[in-house]
Amino acid sequence: MNKEDICFMPAWEMKEKIKNQELTSEEITEIIIERIEKINPIINAYCTPTFELAREMAKRADQNIKRNEKIPLLNGIPTSIKDLVPLKGVRTTYGSKIYENHIPKEDGIVVSRLKDAGCVILGKTNTPEFGFKGVTDNLIFGMTRNPWDLEKTSGGSSGGAAASVVCGLSPLAQGSDGGGSIRHPACFCGAYGLKPSFGRVPIYPRTFHSGQTLSVIGPIVRYVSDAALMLDAMKGPFEGDRHSLPEENVNYFNHINEKPDKIKIGYSLDLGFAKVVDNDVEKTVVNAVHKFESFGWEVEEAKFKVLDPSMAFSTMWLITFGYELKPYLEKWKDKLDPSLVTWVEAGLHFPASSLPEAMRTRSLFYQVIFETLKKYDIILTPSTAVPAFELGVPYPSQINGIDVSPTSWQAFTFPFNFTGHPAATIPCGWTDDNLPVGLQIVGKRFQELLILQVSKAFEEIAPWQDKKPKLT
Image 1 (cartoon, rainbow, N blue to C red):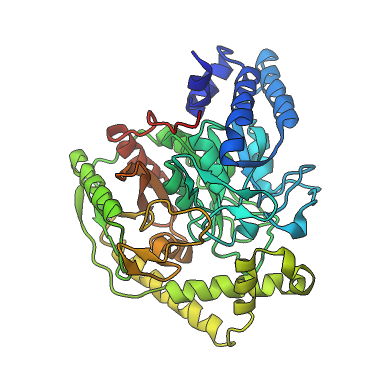
Image 2 (spheres, rainbow, N blue to C red):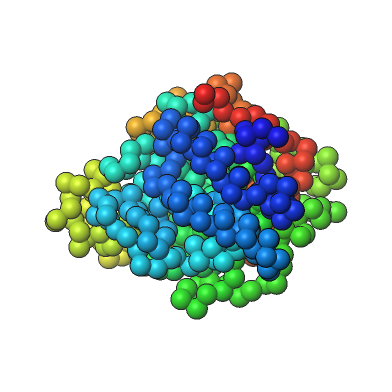
């Protein structure tokens, strides 16, 4: 087995080889570190490597086996941590000059769980400042590039995480998603990303408190089974997060291959409000949707009552950043991302009535999704309305030659942060320019297992992992 094969090996397979010591965690870790040192200067996925920590954790994982001790779930498996999540004793910047030299004194709860599961932490991955936008760049570390076209964005805000996975720089990556920040970069980079139900994976401590009902933590991986494995390690209640869900006593990895006999799927290319979808994306998604019929599942176009939640979402997002960053504005204004400054200042000028109006729209939109999911087990949509766009711009100003709003390209993701439903993106094809296209798979609340099973079924008939970016 050559080094590249090891770097692109599924985590579940690594787990078995480490358990049998056919490969050691130390061997795997060293090979991936070597690849990071070679590839990361090209794409800028890792902002703060932790190679010595990784070597220590890998050694400990191998010792667990040699001493015949209890083997944790992810024993010896390399992973990365997004730079929005605290890692004890390791520089954690949140992509902001404000925290440029910040060294946390405690781990985020998800880091603690991944450590307890035996993961080998390779480093922190790049993110925009406080995860505020859907592309990955900041004033400390710069841009993360798309592995398929270095002049395109990797998406955001988990752009470093997604790019690292696709380039074989880690089989597992921890991402977070407040409006599509797992699904955008996974879609643009050609990875599988899962946004779990709100509360499935606890978040503690929180950087921002006012926007806490939108954001979740989840996995970004190359193989669907690896998402199940990682989610098994991260999920479960935590008293420090009042939104965290009770333990459901379901092992996702053990049940992922149980293909449902009969389900009803509704697909939509607009969710009732999206204005336009890129032609290549639409063609690829429609082709992918009908592949599900080969399982004997019922597939039909879903009709949504028109209710556009875009303004409500933007209002809540801007107000959150406005009031969370207001205390820093006077001192740090010239050292913040200029776009973030614009957001903060806009958020501070909304009238008092804006927030309850946005919350009302959010509630009404939830009812639309609730009524639709009475008819269907799964909803399918494009993951994004466009493939990866140019570096250096926050959003495309046009789709198919039509002028669009800043949220138009992400019209299919943020609605499910509003509602809290689980949603995954899976690669489903390629544009004529060799850019990945993602299919979004949405389920009822708390039904991550069904999403994973449907995703695994699609992966089996439309695998994508043999296609790798050419970076050397």
